[in-house]
Image (cartoon, rainbow, N blue to C red):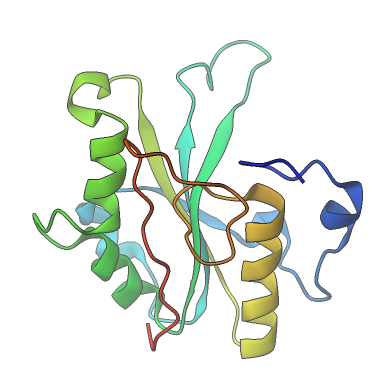
Length: 160
């Protein structure tokens, strides 16, 4: 495996959990407090990802997963990640590390989720996504290592 980021082991990519939702089932929304009402209260897996400034360029599509999680209530968990001006919430930590104020026009952050009802599949899908993408903000189970100027966020596996 790579020391940081996406896995380069083909067997890791082939280990798709039985029942993994199809890409068409994922909902993709811009990551902001204003989308809370668009998010379901169902259980599921979510990915917060960054879209490259070159995403819309001819023949180029780049997106980088930043954080992967699971939740028994996706809306409540999103609210935890984006709540107010708390410097420790995930959204503010991502914005700070990306120097969002200076790069506002170039940096686009998205929240994508898929509904999964069965807990064992929920956990298997989350682990698969962490294994293949190694999101840089996941501390638990991530293959990457934090840098001093780019702090990690602890993943929580509570009720949300």
